[in-house]
Image (cartoon, rainbow, N blue to C red; front, side, top):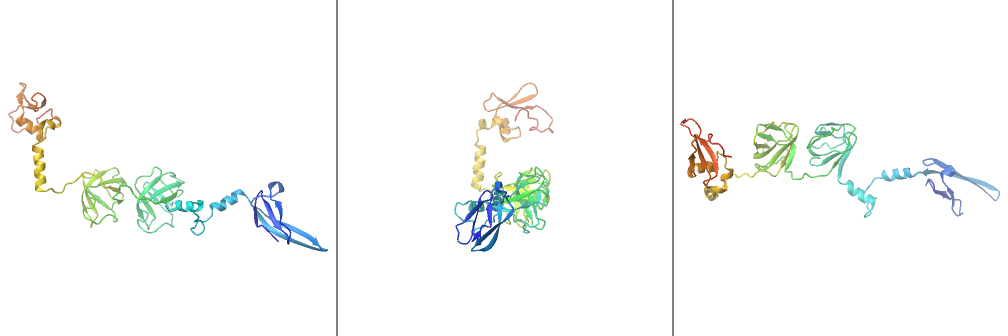
Length: 344
């Protein structure tokens, strides 16, 4: 004999007495049952003049109670590993989630994670932090630097809405695309930036790459790295900074930039020089600036005519198209190049 310990609302309670076939009772709202409550079933019988009774306790569950139990189920490999099952797929999806919680504070370019977060510096670097609820919900940024002692994650660009202690976050696995390095600068001068301690220790590692400042002091500036000292993590840039970066500056290094030629063989140098001097003038004269070698050559070998108005006119190689003009003067202190007018 026995009885179920629980039954869903609207279903039948199954119970048995001695060896008799099971009996049922409808646990419906019409019969006075309510989901989430406990009841006792009392059974009394008289056999051969002897009367006896027994009671069983049971609870009535509602759909929401069952649903809550499903969603609150702890997913483990031992109990939820059936191929293609919902449990296994949920476990696979959760694998990309590294951490989550409620922030304790935030600034325009950082979020302070909850107290139980990792105390290891830079452990969350290059991963994404998304605000999933509370203030700033819907925003997602890449973590550029993580300070384990304070649980502060510095992000790669400014928040649109600054997170605070109501902001729920999730950190998701990610790897920066087209980034050689990134982090929080440690210093800066007129034409240098000292990268984070996680940067490369190899001299010249970032030469030819672009360093872009994203938040903190000097955001929006992009410069070519022309020299790099691995032992100090100091990158020299060109041109000089408009605003010098400091310890609040977040940077990214992108492995694309202008080509830098450190040296060339004698044969290569001669080949370049030969190409310059063998260049056909009519291919470059139309766009030649007044301070260019092309304009100087035109002045030397092309038609130069006095227009009778105090100017000499320099023509292109076709002898017809006027390229520039120059004032005729007897003042030896004037610059003949700066006097040229009309050239690009």
